Length: 424
View 1 (tube, rainbow, N blue to C red):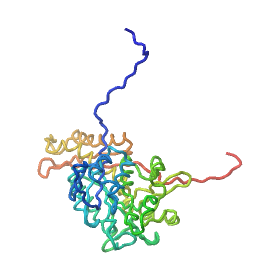
View 2 (view 1 turned 30 degrees about the vertical axis):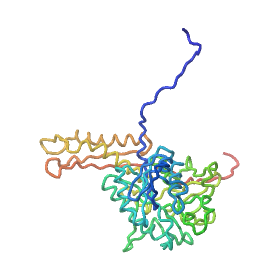
View 3 (view 1 turned 120 degrees about the horizontal axis):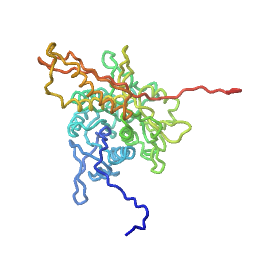
View 4 (view 1 turned 90 degrees about the vertical axis):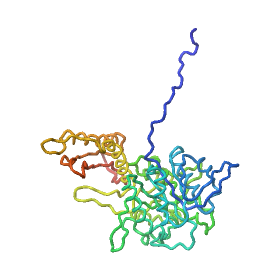
């Protein structure tokens, strides 16, 4: 019998998702308190020395962390901001610790291990409730002292093949002026050696209006919104700058968030307007406003290191995006090459070295990783070079390979001139 429907279009079925969002997996290590389990209310509870895997706000609330939990700390705030920006479904690992920020790094190592190395970016929230905070060049001593410790932590993650960028909460910013604030891009160690913490960033940005109603002695009034920053990082592709204006507005008027931007000294950025350029140059991360467009945006994605470039054109990861690109390449190249470990390889019978065709084969394995990154718009180009003189006969039998990446560029500022003229 003929149908009277004319054109009948039905929804097709969708198979299992193949979207790989591993580059967006984040972690939050925060000072906090335990929550007792309450099975009658469906509360599983929170304990110290335990890592929890979240994919949405409901997961957090099941642990027993709700808005009422944030009486001294800001865990609920940080996680809710992460999911507001990044979207629910993204993985966020959570762990709470007791003590000072500089004491958190053994917990951070365990957190990485518990997550089986999945965490790409770890934010560490400080002990906002600590009293009598001692300041060092405008930052709590615990934050200042944690910068080299955070770089040491990154070095450990890299050496164990689980590279993980670190964001530190620069709570209670207290510099009286930008000139008196620590220069995060020129920090000096013992012996006047410049610290190159190229995988560590410090956020001092704050949603000013969100805490303006809190009492002056309430520690949460002086927090930095690292949850917002962490969500911005998870939202962006690895080579994306969180300061990108397109798609990067932090303000949501309907939800009443980031209606005003401030610093973690709880002063509006308007108060610091003449000095924001200097704070920016010193590598701090905070919210800013651009004349001509509504809302607030991150200023940039700096890391705590000077910009370094050698005579051959190699340069360091002086931004988070450069660091994330390099870390992704390291992970992807390792995955591509691991199947060849302990494999048998024929060598040139005359030289005992690699035949040219074999060297080219392994170069192609690495280059295919780069080709996928180019196709995804993550890098501009990449090249793999295999040392054909690699010794694979007498121990240590190592295939020597080098990799070079040309990253994508970034327009930090547009400069132009304009004039009136009688004709074009």
